Length: 354
Image (cartoon, rainbow, N blue to C red):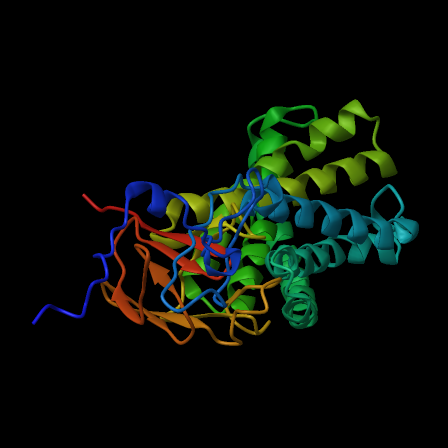
């Protein structure tokens, strides 16, 4: 009996395949940023998706020597402006309240500026105000104390100069005597800087930088007075120079002596370095954190922390953090590690000891 299935076999040719139309709704197009657009990426990306951020050029305004120098300049100039109306040239009975208060007030406001500067450039205004309020009484007390100490050192220096035959303020020996005496003003600024920062090491670096900067500024005070013929302008320029030199000195010494730090590679704080002074450093969007990360709603109030125990530096994450393109919760940091938190990218650095 013949087969009832007389249908011809189904044949599909290459032409048939080429003529098949795929609906647009079925086409999956990978998401990519527009050409030339800056893309930071956020932690709201798909789970485990790593979107690297490009390294950005740092701003000079975020360099410690720069913002501390500006803070010292503004503090010294403000102190001079407050006391100058009550200041009279001359010695003895002609002195007024400005003569007694000009140095303590200048020291107080320089300390106030140093205390606020770092938090201000980090946009942590709450922390800046709190530190400024704490610095005012500290600076005032240290201002009177260090002025007393500076006068003793200066008078001893002048006695040595006079005994050596230097009887004029045009003599460089007298300039050096003033510079040595005024080094204590820089020490006051560095001390308050460390106390407010809750770090003995930070205070130590600040004192060294303050001694150097204020000493150099103090040595130039008399030459400035000679060049400007004395009076209020010379005091304004001289004290402002002392404030700048003290701040710049503190910033340069702090940067030179640091041993562990995070350098911001990308994000709103690109170029800023966070020196790791404390045994526990908190990182997050809460202004009270040691490293405050703003302008990123995906950063948690306390997103991560760094704990230092001897030579061991451990990173712990609460929110999403990427290392080498992978999410990481804990890691013992190594020199050169790159960490990404939302739109921020950090390079961990440490100084190698020989």
